[in-house]
Length: 172
Image (tube, rainbow, N blue to C red; front, top):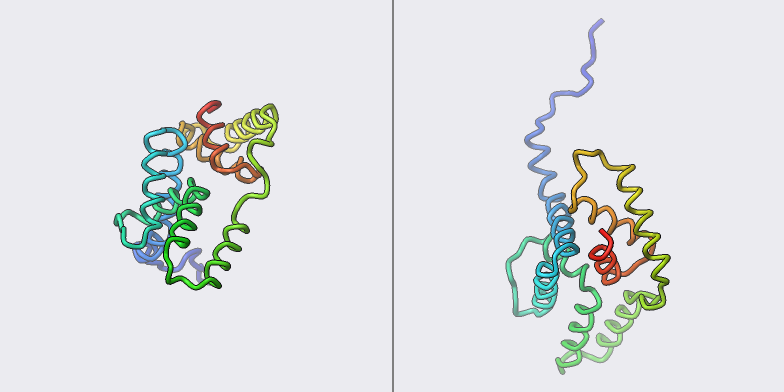
C-alpha cells in the first residue's frame, strides 16, 4: 500500500502571486480605515482623498485599498459632492440624473444618527470591546486591531460611519 500525500505538490509561491493582488486592497483598506478612526489627521486626509477621487480629471495614483477605505469613511460627503458635480454638468441627460438620485436615496441610511440613544451606543461599544477580548489572541491585541474589530462590530449593529468614528475616538 502506498501512502497518499495530504497535499499534492503545490507551488505556494504561485498561489501567493495569484492571491496577493486580490487580498492586498482589502488589507490596505482595513489598515487605512483603522488609522482614520484613530487619528483626526488621517481622517482629514482620507476625506480629501475621497473628494479628489470623485472628480474625473484628478487621479492621485493611490493604492485601491486606501481609496476604497477613504470613500467608505466619507460616503455621505462623497455622494453630496458627486451629486453637485452631476448637477453642474449640463450635458448629462435628465434620465441619468434621475437614476443617480435614486441610487443616492438607496445608499443613504434610513435612520438619522442623532436619533440613537447615547447610553445604548456606549453599551454597544462595551459589548464590542468584550467580544474583541474574547475573540482575539493576546499577541494580536493593540489599538489598530481593536478599533478595526469594534468598527466592523458596530457596522453589523447598524451604526453609520461618522458615529462609529466618534464612538471609537471617545471610548476606545
